[in-house]
Image 1 (cartoon, rainbow, N blue to C red):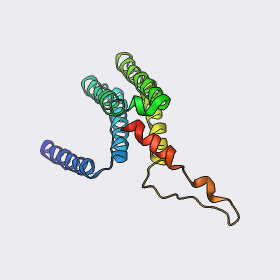
Image 2: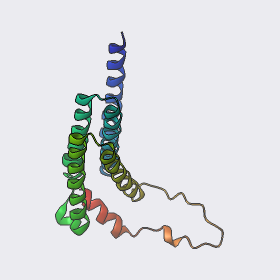
Image 3: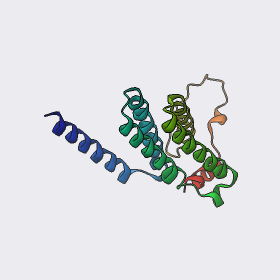
Image 4: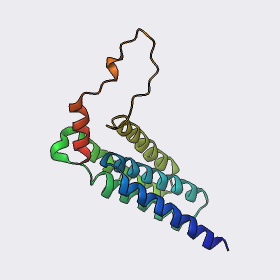
Amino acid sequence: MFGSAFRGANAYAQVGLETQVVAASPHKLITLLFDGAMTAITNAIRQMSEEDVAAKGKSISHAILIIESGLKGALNIKAGGEIAANLEALYEYMGQRLLQANLENNQEKLKEVHRLLGELKSAWESIDPTRQPHVSMEQNEDTSILDIPPTMTQRFAQVAA
């Protein structure tokens, strides 16, 4: 009884995700990768608490795949220079921490990677070229600090290309 409803909900979620991916800009696709990895880690933390070893392993493997093939695979080391190289090293570190967390049943290592991904996602979203600044300013404050130089936006976009 619940199995078919669960499969239906999963199918609905999958269609929603596929629709987001098809309609997404390259910038949004990276955001979706961050979301997917963070969701997989959140699931792994819950599954670890429930002692569901198989599901935990599957969720951690999914997070590693997203980080290694999606986020790390999207880096353009040549165009991104030092920033891309640092991100590549950070993604490798995250993959190692996730493997250790799986082997040691260590939620703290999962939480560490989740936090790192959250920080990167926040930084990535802050440079979204379609984002409208939403900052409350006093009347006499200088608003020029809100302008992001086009060269900086282009550089970050190149890192993910």
